[in-house]
Image (cartoon, rainbow, N blue to C red; front, top):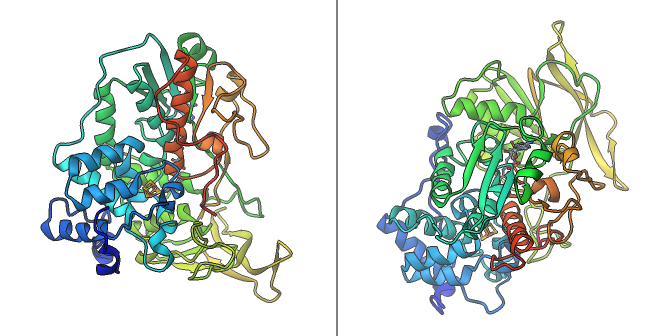
Length: 490
Ligand SMILES: Cc1cc2nc3c(=O)[nH]c(=O)nc-3n(C[C@H](O)[C@H](O)[C@H](O)COP(=O)(O)OP(=O)(O)OC[C@H]3O[C@@H](n4cnc5c(N)ncnc54)[C@H](O)[C@@H]3O)c2cc1C
Ligand code: SF4
């Protein structure tokens, strides 16, 4: 245990400050400072790691789908044993520099110290360990010298595909990752904005994977450029990690007006532009009134993007009522409560409106959106009922629909591989991630439904163990979850 009295000596959470709002909205660079090697920052980290009580029944293990070993790496951080801390961190997580930046940290809402004090700063300690380790030259490719003769195709290079590919490569199999975008990373690269997760952080990890022997083939739309039958004929196993890519729509009058678009049609070109890549015909928010329909994290990412593009006004609409600031009685510790959260984007501008529904989109004479007709709603017996007399029009020349995703694309590759979809539109798989087509496995959002990076990594790791067992009859790869594992996240 790090410091038996640490949680009494240091009662408050300390986190490195973010870049000032007025400065960071001028560019696309990461909003967080990473004070690697800085003496004051290391001292603060020492105090924070010392707050871990090594409580005996660490619920944070269960809060994290990866089963990260927080008390162990808190202890090693407190002792300044960076090589050991990094090794312990990487035992359970392939990409801690990504979760350490943008995981919503369900571990922290289940931290035992959090029952009556602010929780241990687990996520920042995770990030600090891996960034210190990179800075000190402690993160190396794990190149293995014993190869099987088995080949695996991974389709999709988001966190699920990357985790599966790294695990299977390290088990000695020859792994090829196919990605239809021009570079690997999935939502990590072109979905999540550069100011939250820079592309060079992804590239740094991809370089390690390349050095370990994983082969990447970008710009290949599997199902069209290469068929499912080709994959089955050429590889011993196929892992589908194609994500949940079909956006939920809002079929109200005026939906087909120009200037009303799904979140990914807005964020992906914006991310290309942020990386200095040429973008044709992208809608940008400069000088416009922007309305984002959907109050979740994707909507918040659109908000931060519109701020940086210089929108005239930004409004984010949410149909649910504003959540409370405190844990609701029905969501006690250690669950992940649905409380009012302020993301980094919300600090930067825009207005959030709760309990409001879109009735229709209004257009101008050129067929472009000019506004939204909205109405306040209240929940009555589980239904959203309009509040009479609250109808109004919000001006908008750009409307972004951030309403989530309804599942993976089944046409093409899904059909070619004989994959069925369940009632939620996700690919059907068994507890061990295997589908009814022999040798085909499903992991990540395309099987779980729209979720989180930490779940995608956990699924990728677990599916890799199942594939390894399928190929060799046994496995030593860890399997943190089964396909139906649910979390403490509400
Ligand atoms: C805007 C946005 C912001 C988010 N922010 C966060 C966050 O801050 N924290 C968090 O934890 N989670 C966040 N999420 C959720 C998280 O990104 C996803 O849960 C996660 O990326 C899912 O990983 P995946 O590997 O299953 O799929 P994805 O990351 O979606 O990757 C799937 C990949 O498969 C490729 N593909 C699909 N079909 C084919 C094909 N036929 N051939 C070749 N390639 C194909 C796609 O191009 C894509 O690159 C966010 C999601 C969005 C949309
Ligand atoms: S991956 Fe997420 S849940 Fe797991 S320890 Fe890190 S921040 Fe916590």
